Image (tube, rainbow, N blue to C red):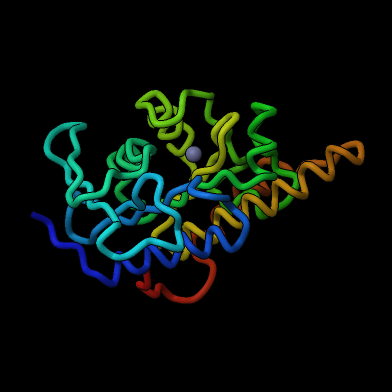
Length: 224
Ligand SMILES: [Zn+2]
């Protein structure tokens, strides 16, 4: 049995509540997970439990039991989207936390089945020249997990067509910050579309900005 520090369970709960308070999700939609340092396992919010009712014991520990096989520990069922989280952690070791939302503006853009183009330099916060939109698949399926993993191959965040947003990070704090940023960008993008259009930044500039983001900010603080 893998032991998850209570501190990390509490950080997952705090992040889920912040996500809700920030208006990134309503009711029990969305979910949050964090990789457990030094293991293959991760913690994830349970399925269908209101965020205000979460306790450390209701956070589900997902343990890898084989290639592509995972098992929950504890008495709660994991978020229905646990496969999406498992696939992302398996594909990219640098991902330490994931925030999945149905934030309204970004989800509206996802219904256009379009990537968010480089209309603002902060688009590069997702790791590249655009914020890709992963093709639609039914919620809670492996198809959706694979679709998201492909969109995240060269990005830290993406849209899920007709569904929502996935934001990853090296900490819960950075994953939530990216989810907020994507929602903010989506709001501006929809306003611009409604007002008749926009100019886009050149690809070369976006690559330069994406590179700068890698070293932006304070020296690393390991704080989930
Ligand atoms: Zn969802």
